Length: 456
Image (cartoon, rainbow, N blue to C red; front, side, top):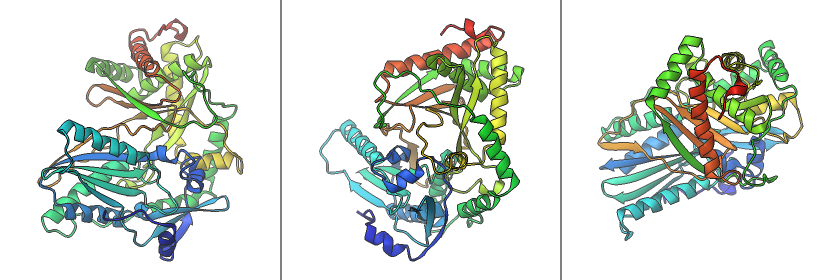
């Protein structure tokens, strides 16, 4: 054990060397995560990454590289506390890196059994919530399987990292590790612009007309909105456990080509076509033409923040009317118009937005039950000197939403859904995936047909 979890006493000692500033409330339940990290759905927003390292690992260089990332990016040196109804972010000058080293070489087991045991340990660690008041939002476990094989588990939190940030983290980790192996102090340029700068700029603009126009747009957009969940296989309890399972399905590469050709010919983006398909599914499964889904936007509109680790991505409601008398192209035009409107007003964090519209009130119903993400964050090339490194996919066993949907159309069409297994059976989610396929095909082959005539 290199570092043990911080105690309350240890954390309070460190807080003397800290700067405090109002935190951006990215998520509606962020204050609940701080007040009661074990009793809320805080653990569902852990962000685990597992890497298989094959070759001669220099463990000290790896630890030093991770420590340098913590030093470079202040979000990993941040703690949070509640001051009344306000959330305060505290940035420490220094904080120990949570690093656990586990040697499994002497464990008597077959290779497949050892692999299964390690992945179960990864899932268990991903389940353990981060206490945002006293623990940094980065902890690391290194499993040594043999002299030439290790598995590196990095747990961060969505309050520290979005998908874009993970690519920065892995790229910097590779460059730092390779530099330290070669005897170079650090090959990375200093960080000139920090997440604090971004947050400070945002806070200073909150009293201006641009912020008011954003609030005015969303006040109109959310007027009369009541998110309707789709029918579940099990009773929907007041306090869901948010246990999750993961399903993945791939579709023929020809489908991607058809969607892109159809989108280009009709003036839509492929994402708008994918979103329209899921909006139609939700409309049918909730028996409501007034339908909406959460979408994720990178929200990195300034070049200074393109290389900064932080929770810049925002989750917004994409709402439209799926009236059955609309043609496919008319419906897609509605989705396109709604999408462009949302993109133009994407900057207010979801939690801040709801606080502005409903100050001092509890948000009893979520803004949306399903989140759709197009995996198009820029991918950095990363190379660890002397190692072959690959990401390892494993199911963390949690679910942030009823349905958390990822679409990747870079090499074929890959659809992944993390679903709340306390609500849905696997075959229900599988049928939803099949419906998505059928709707895309219907959009492309029958763009003039009415929505009511689409059978799926």
